[in-house]
Length: 424
Image (cartoon, rainbow, N blue to C red; front, side, top):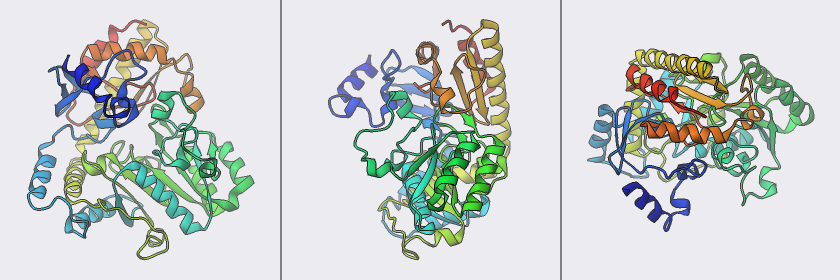
């Protein structure tokens, strides 16, 4: 097989044959298909196999692969501009578009990834408050910045490791860990160290320990604790931004964070991240303020063009979100019905176009502790079965299933048909 040959040779030149660990399919019983092309809701590997794509590049491809408007924006831009490391109008256009169409973002700084966005947001919060400590939540993954690699979700969970080698104790001494959907655990941390807590960073819809929406009272309680203690609230909307709703999870809950981080969809499939918020906070960034953060490729014109084309299309087509919700509901209800009939130990969590199927005897999955009880052995069998049926899902129990606007009801039917023939 061509995919196997490519993957095996890749191991000679890249650690594990990959540039991001979960792509190695380490915890499932097969090698990864090497993807050659994609169009709409479908991807194709080097051996010519077709898959309905429910990974969507881990979230960014909300418009589907190679959307014509996005491709045209990239083509027309790169004929005249690839990179300058200088100010361009297109970066203004995208920043202005976000600030005028997304709530709670008065100013914005472009970066190149979700990790860069979250680590910069934390640095900014520390610089603004003059405090050192941050609170994160067990199971929430905010990128591979040292301060976040404590009880992290995503690939860290998949690898079955508590954190990462190469992270000095001093790097995490200012990271406090609370329990997701447990407000009392946050209150206790504020009671003990509230005067030195710069910020709380959280995924309002957690997507890195499977999909786990935050309880409304939990999230609003955190907002109140931050206000009471003079700490900033950072919403990590790297995954949920423009996906669960155009204005992100914060618009669903009606909560105003002080800083929001974005990535994935914001770049239209190209490497991009951003963080933004209140003007008085953002003006602490250099060159206006003392918090230094820079990036040679930040605001790259080709990336900005792809992002602007994507966000304009999403903003001007609210019916896309109606379509995604309809498909998500059909998928959720269908999987629940099949699991009940087959007596499979399954819990389903969903928020809009993000979906998770947990193999667990628990009646619900609300936090990191619940997620870790899932049966990854059953998941590995499920994954192998689904991909053999042409259904491409993430090779990890702790990653989300993503929908895009090019998926159809027939695609959902094929997913459900494949799931209906799965046996433990």
